[in-house]
Figure (tube, rainbow, N blue to C red):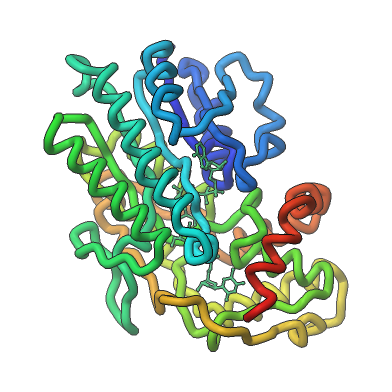
Length: 350
Ligand code: NAD
Ligand code: DAU
């Protein structure tokens, strides 16, 4: 049985990946290592928690001794690293946690892999999951390719860029069998309601203002989360050693257009008259260093590995809104406790 370590498997994308791997590969044992920060939630994994090829481990990737002992104990065959602090606004508010988890945590994993895998290093795989935000911001045209120079603007993207460089350095210096992917904005079930789509669904549900940053003209390329984890599966198994693959939805939306679409679907599903929640739109001060536009050229993964998005946006978006409305208890659970304090701090002065 192959032993695969997934970090951050209780988060949004990680929990979808754990589901896929546990179900698709009965001959793999999936170890899910997660610190269970505010963003990690074992409720996301309820339906697979008793599977015989799945083990949850609570732990912090910043804890060097713990990581070394874990690797020494299990002799993993490979690692898919998703654990991170992932929210740009939080990184602007308190950058240090991002440096610890995203940079120091990644180096701890790299060191543990290098030290325990040694002669077998070529056969074991270190997969680092990263973001398109490392490339910076685009103007009206063009798209990020794998060779676009790094130009991060937020503490979050700078910390992810830094970890990407370190992962590549361990390949070039020590021969670690690494692969990296840089993906665009994901949407779907189980995303913490600090990110645009679930935050706005939750606010519409409770008739709260919808805080649109700046003029709402920033553009993001949205990909359904299930398509992202299928790409991760493919890259983990077939990606070439040392390579980077961009993953994107080929699905660009200006924030304000996406928000109008979101309002239309949510109002319809809540059986409110058309356009009811449009009045909740509130333009607030812009995010500092707000990247104008992201777009991904995903032709490398398409040409080399045959991947392309399979979920049409209309379908994925409606499924997503419906999921949050059908899972109000999940929303309630994750927005109790510290969430109220976070919301106050983040939005009261905008
Ligand atoms: P998330 O915030 O939903 O989940 C992160 C998970 O990491 C949580 O379960 C959290 O408990 C865990 N974690 C945080 N710090 C940890 C630590 N020190 N030790 C162990 N576990 C820790 O994030 P997400 O949106 O699922 O993103 C997952 C990965 O994908 C991140 O690396 C992110 O940079 C990348 N990514 C995200 C997107 C997106 O649109 N969400 C797009 C591209 C890339
Ligand atoms: O591109 C990939 C990245 O996508 C990931 O690496 C990040 O982990 C993920 O959080 C996401 O980053 P963004 O900053 O693009 O996502 P967010 O949902 O925070 O914001 C999407 C857009 O909506 C962005 O232009 C800011 C805007 N926004 C966001 C919030 C939370 C608002 O206008 N109002 C809001 O309240």
